[in-house]
Length: 314
Ligand code: RIB
Ligand code: CA
Image (cartoon, rainbow, N blue to C red; front, side, top):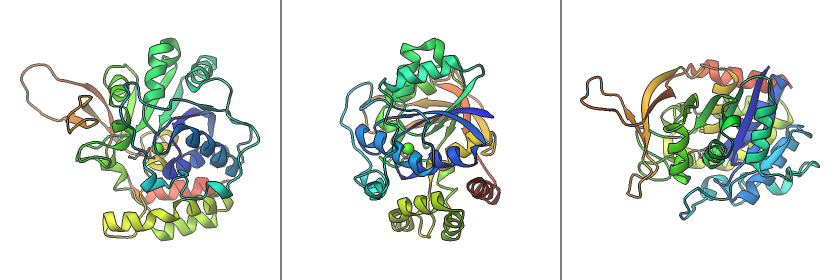
């Protein structure tokens, strides 16, 4: 089975991604590390425990990571999307798991888990890349055990938290540039350009609820997002960014990645946190950035059906 680690800022869509990895025991989910992002770090850590309790993952280690970006700047949580509690107002009715957060910080637990693995590990980053950048700096030998890093992040035709930046990249552009551009990690970026096309219908959500308690719990967590996305998209569809990114990790290639030269704007102008794609077929002089995989396309029916089937495997 595919060894997997998830770094996350739960987060409504993070909850779906965590549950997909935990559902059906078809991947070897070894560790969940948490980061600030959608809501502050003390809440994302507790939310990971709540979601894993809902999924029946009583003993999966959870380690708390960064509470802010590498280079301090003002944080803006995404409570307008995820609710003050980070789980669509449902955290209060979701019991914490008996096993608490690990006593050691996330980057140390992440390094130990990677070094203990006898095969390369796929890491999925669903939040700001601060923890991954810190691992690269403090435990390069452990980072070398990452076989693939799937990142939900970026937007090449504009952003969501600002006109040009997607939230995860915008939270810590310095970390994002170190991970995506300056490292030699095998990165697959899953950008808004892709996730915005992969929204689910109310019928799909009803089918997810029919798979059982986890699906029903996820539906409750996401209930408050339908109206927002209807205003954004002009139709009742729910965009679940992190679910799509985890699907690429669970079924490699399902999002048909393409090789693209990508850079990240870590300056302090209006484009801070933007991801830039250099698709020029002819150019003079050196290229900025690095060539990585970028998720480009998918078969919506296949993707949505596979996810439902996995939840039905319980
Ligand atoms: O921009 C969407 C991403 O930012 C998702 O991962 C969401 O959970 C937030 O972390
Ligand atoms: Ca997230």
